[in-house]
Image 1 (cartoon, each protein chain N blue to C red):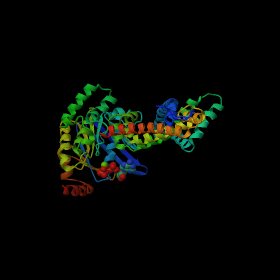
Image 2: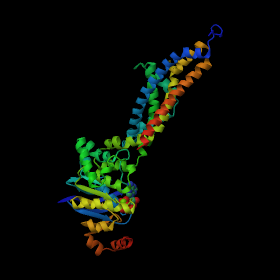
Image 3: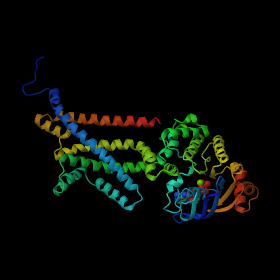
Length: 226
Length: 245
Ligand SMILES: Nc1ncnc2c1ncn2[C@@H]1O[C@H](COP(=O)(O)OP(=O)(O)OP(=O)(O)O)[C@@H](O)[C@H]1O
Ligand SMILES: [Mg+2]
């Protein structure tokens, strides 16, 4: 079938399909950063939540200062502080990907810690008492009795925060990380087809977030069967 | 042989002194029932015996271990002291079998097959073998409490503490639980039972302790305490509760 489009002007599908391989490369970077950062952020959040609940004043304070520092400042400022601020001291040299992962992890960690703290506190204290009365240590009771129940309860809020963190990764394009948003920018200026490119980028983000939600509700339903 | 010895035990919550000066001794294989009005400190007393409550003063010696001494490994002592709660406190995310095997496996690093075999024996004993793979949410109150008893027994404790084990149950469930407890008493388990079941106290108890206002007011054999109470407070409490039966 002959093409009726003018020379040098692609059909909408051509613009998108030639941009897609590069956008998917960006998506790979986004997912890579997201997965590492969310795992680190979660572990950090767990640790900070335990600090917050420990019967040790200094640990409580560390947790409180950290959470408030993160909650009280914009993500971009945190990113610039870690990438430009820390690097300017010249005692470490963080590349942009590392700085990005650290920022997302530290940011998510603060919110996760509050979610986990609330989750732990929502479990009836009779559960701890029953576990301790059987001779379990405090940390065994936490690990085998409290946390498994708390996590089930927290799952929807954890999913929510993970989605927010995924969206935050798009800000990492500012420090030159070649994530999905950055690739979108490159494609948009190369093709002069901002509308189509950004629409495509949006759809890709939407699909990923949709998949995360679907996975989370699948896991939730598995738990509910009990 | 004396297995529980309590001397001048005091317990305060903030500035409120809830246990004022408690002295008690329990011999091996004895069944002690603790009765008294609401708020008199019965639960607090029981919870001091495995240090679920920090002890404010005095001394509690369990099987030779002074648990008021911070150097004593309380987790070790607790392995010998089973506890059954009014609200069961089963682990809802674990099956009945897992509820029972958790502590032996994690605390004693016991072997899985052996522990499960023992757990099934305990479930037989409380008449719930067929519920091994159910979750607590699928059980009635009476069944939950019997699982809770089996869970505590899985650590082979020397002493069992019961805090109003039948108070949260529908009346028709109470009998099954009391029956299990009576059987346990017959087998020679040392038991301290906080209860409102005067019939159980009369029939199964070796001694009954009456508490009021943070003190042990009176202590005697069930026949004496119920038949011939010495103190006015005991008399008025008994007249109230016995009228209700
Ligand atoms: N954690 C706590 N903090 C503050 N006060 C407490 C606490 N636990 C118990 N108390 C108080 O201590 C007193 C004794 O309580 P306890 O639970 O030992 O009574 P009880 O004899 O078991 O009563 P009941 O028959 O209602 O169970 C009550 O006045 C109660 O309000
Ligand atoms: Mg009580």
